[in-house]
Length: 489
Image (tube, rainbow, N blue to C red; front, side, top):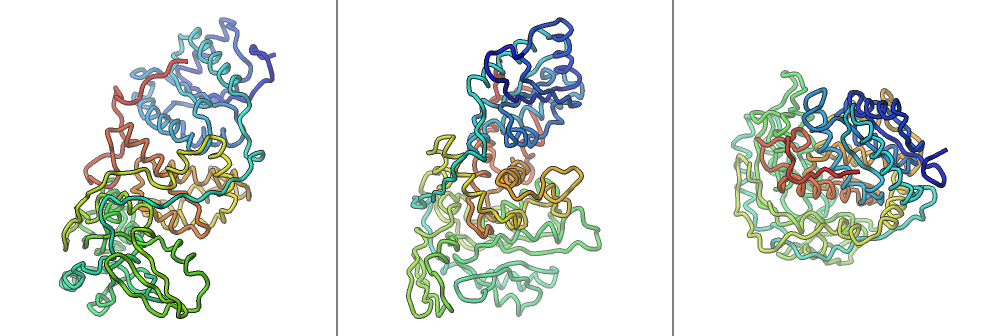
């Protein structure tokens, strides 16, 4: 019978083999009274606990999850709990954006000799979970569908980029193309209102290069496939890449993680004045047979489709990431043309994240149920991501270990997005390709934006893709963390 009154709840505990499991054993040998709600899983080290274990337990119906390991500086494996502390704190602050109360998850430290402390920890945590009550179930949530308000004031003036020195860029590419296997940029797609990637191998190909607000793709997606460090030397290419400021961050992050080599890549850059949110433009255009023409001016474009004109101002139809962009010109480019636009505004919360911030936990839970129910599991988000570099061994496809099933349920779809978000923690450059590629328009970028916000708050305003010499924060640690405080149970 449980020590606490009322119905027994489902609480999962991950305990370090060397300390906390020993502490629990010490409490048992001493016949200390403990709640029976706990289900213990013994692991070699707290550093072995993937945040996905906790997410899996919570999404599968656990009412609470407790992680306990060796005290800092006492780890059997020297630094396992230092790495765990960073990962678990990021996870704890990520949970609320999913609609999960972060009080349902806690991590702490208990040594093998602290049987009395273990009794206190498990009793207090169980009491907290009983006070919160049974966790909400996805099956019981009512789907909620809402659209974010995109009206934002940009940090800098947005435009169509028609005054950019494109001819200078083309001449620079032509001068170096003989020394490169390929240069990747953009060309006109099926019509003037859409672009597709351009792979330039000759001077004639360079003449097809275009620049403007329709250049939405991130060409860095192809970099690792062409020059990744895992490729045999004979298969590596020497490539050029035409980049916007946000695209260059992905390249810097790949360099930072030593996934590519700098000598294999040349960056060409022009100042970006913003790119269109093509999903919103296509919705506005509706069903049409053909695009007759596209006319540019400094503030936007006029698209004539089937003889009907549609006016799109870049300030109203830009991608959400463009409003907060503070690096419109790549600072790490080998060949750069044009001037850096002046930053005049102050950063604001991205629109999808601001919408979620305004919701209650219950509303967020219902929101993600409604959104993920539309997910096709096409993995376009993964395939478009420049930082998803293990596609041949993706955890979503593997059966050893069987992390995620092919069950057609909202739970599995949310879990896949959590896998993607947590694997990008401290690495995502917020290029937005995942959300742009989604065929049903799920605002999954908000999950990455929340983690980026947490990373910035915890680790001295760290931003991904800015410094090729920096170390991603979840791949290192500090003995004394300034912004991570011990919470007592």
